Length: 92
Image 1: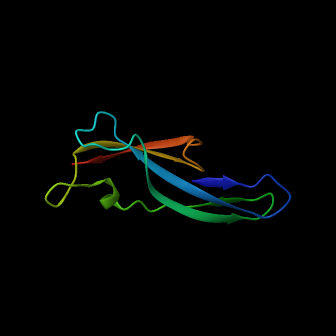
Image 2: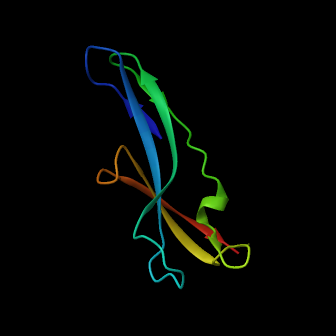
Image 3: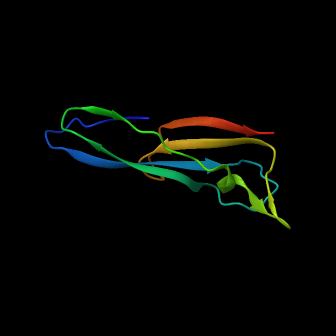
């Protein structure tokens, strides 16, 4: 994700990644945090940030860690209510 600082002072932002699984057979929250990364951006500049998402955060416990096959919607932004980017991660 690219983060732009349109201000005239250096800034810092935390990019967050949330997972969603509509129609999950597992009791899950509607959206849960699976990754975050801070990024410092000088005034007037743009910076790229990569956020690692551990697949274990997509698993559930059922006599051991299990993965529900299919798609997980990953939403990316700066807070749980500001998530302008999204992609789908499919587990086999």
